[in-house]
Length: 251
Ligand SMILES: Nc1ncnc2c1ncn2[C@@H]1O[C@H](COP(=O)(O)OP(=O)(O)OP(=O)(O)O)[C@@H](O)[C@H]1O
Image (tube, rainbow, N blue to C red; front, side, top):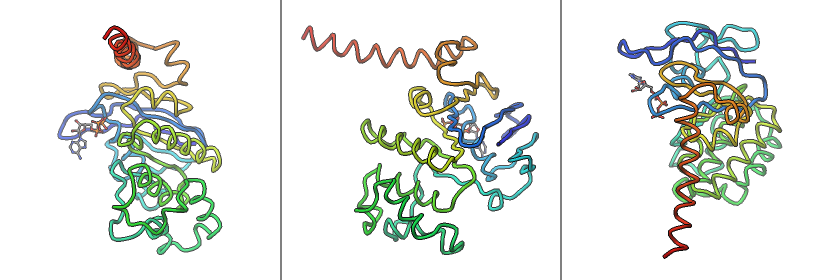
């Protein structure tokens, strides 16, 4: 279990995160949702260890990780832009990390992941020859072969369109379930958060606005911000589509 206790972070005297406390159970998929600039990526970076907390504690399975360097935490991230090596092919990208830590995944395990992520026919391709969804899957495989204790994903679906988005969403869910992998995802899209996660963490103005199961957030929004910001966005999406059909029908 991952526990955040009273996490605080400021940049240049401005409080970004103030007193964030929560737990994430093993194998859970959590989405961090909030407006632009609300500190979602900052929270992910604090968990990863790339950014230091100003106050509070990060505990993993009872062990205080707050001052443990990033490399020793054993958490791993897929960045928003995938950060793949353009001079290597897909397979070399996937297995890159194993050079320094051989044996962390067996050949069978690497093959299983490649199969699970549907990458078999793309292994020899250069990164520039891959579509956005394929790059995303290579980035996911590259992170997964290192067997992270926690998988962190920063806006994993934002660059993908409808059908591919749904397929990657399914793969993320399958991986989290099959590997019983704790997965924490940053997103600004309420629909994504509510359909992908076991629990959704909504942050606003540096604080936790609500942390709960999707059905709790939809049926029992705990404050006006959730109702107005999150649920309104979903409503607007629905009414945009509805209006579009109405216009087409009357045209
Ligand atoms: N290294 C940094 N130095 C100074 N300010 C920073 C730094 N990193 C983030 N910030 C500021 O902290 C705030 C939160 O940024 P963060 O990237 O965590 O927000 P976010 O919720 O992920 O936003 P978005 O949805 O737009 O990506 C922003 O105002 C940002 O400008």
